[in-house]
Length: 286
Image: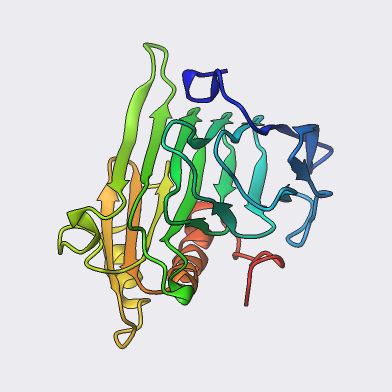
């Protein structure tokens, strides 16, 4: 295990999932879990070639000292969509006992793995660190989003104290070693100036990122994705090209609005990078 999750108290949840193709059907070849994580049975709303998996956090949220480690290995030709059964909650804790999540995704040649969890709600006084690393073999495509709400804003709560750290890394496997394709590190302190700064959250409680890596979009697609955002919707969005992919950003008042836009972007892009229409997971809120 990495240093992020070592020497900690509380729940030490884990999920190790592997996928392969047998007789034209993508199946889960390994589904090891340790509480509070578990996995629902595989779903095939899009046919046998693409496996949907739903991760469940049975404890309802992370408290101080809790940690989760998720490892997913997609063998050659696998097509997998992974989501979560509900929003993740990170409760307040002492700074000396943060909660953490570490995710490692390994994609074999000619695979597609879509990592699309529901949003994370970071409560006031929460201390939380999350790390996501993706390793892409040649011909692999990764699509993933992250939506975070700071404070239970429906109750008038703001993120007045605490720490949030996020680290996302996407690497391309090569004979000479790994090459970074996208590195994204973010840090936010409760009550700090970036919460209200125009260069930060601008007073909004929700931020989100959606990236597709391993697929080169056409220049006109960038403009098309921007047009999918309703002009009368509060909040700000942006779409930029990555080294081998694209990145969408959102900041605004609504995690639902962020998800709706990300889903629209995904539905627009998926026929291009995977050759099939996008089927919305049945567990996502309507």
